[in-house]
Image (cartoon, rainbow, N blue to C red; front, side):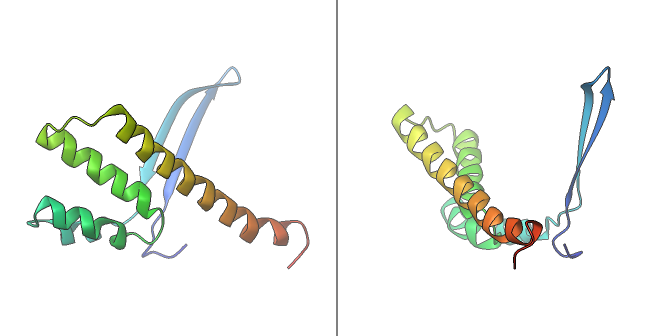
Amino acid sequence: MTALEGGIRLDLRLEGGRIAEARISSSRPVAACAALQGRPVSEALRLLPNLFGVCGTAQSHAGIKAAEAALGIAVAPAQDTARRLLLAAETAEQHAWRLFMDWPPLAGGS
């Protein structure tokens, strides 16, 4: 991981074998978000997945949900379900990619 990418850190405090506290801190840059400032919502939503190289669907989903909340737009349950399915598909794809990339070296392969 480079300084440009940053990272996410999760600290857990255990008590009696259970998680008593969880803290998440991020050093990931947010400068890319400045590219969205002052733009119309439609343009910002079009640009959003291109600003982040990983999980473009998740980034788009978060942006759409934020815009809908800010504008007071209600979404039909079927539309929300379709979005969640797209998000789940992207999540599965990203996990599969990491498995194919990370597991062979860990298992002694190349």
